[in-house]
Length: 157
Image 1 (cartoon, rainbow, N blue to C red):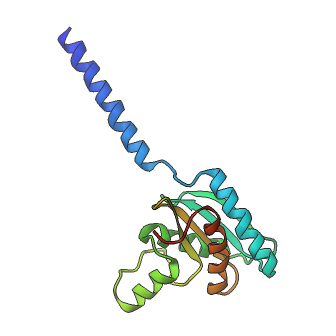
Image 2 (spheres, rainbow, N blue to C red):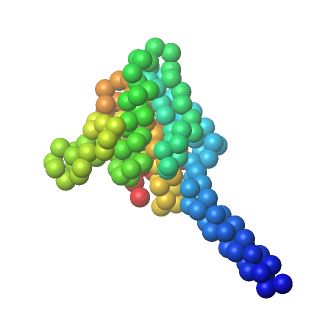
Image 3 (cartoon, one colour):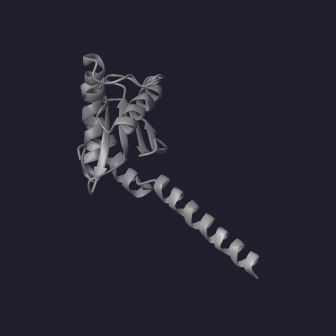
């Protein structure tokens, strides 16, 4: 009976600790939030006549939504992915990250880029993911990303 009780307690502890780990890795960027942000970002890009790729990720850098508007360059997905990587790793915009790298205040992240276009998304003070755009000038890419982020949260904590 004692061994069964110990096994039961061990199993409960394992399940409990596993659920805590899973809860920490749970995506905070829901599909519905990503859809709202994507609609706003894409509408903004289309109003400007910009053919871009827009990537929305959760806080763990997992893709939640991706749209590549017809005419967006072949390399835009790679750049959007690299922007999201630095945003999620730092909580900064990709442009702010680049400024810190150039100033020597931050180590460069392997596979990242140092130019604007990626922004973090904060909701209720919590970093929930990133929106990264590529296809036009870096500042214009950032405008598209901000248009999406502001619909569901903010780009700063």
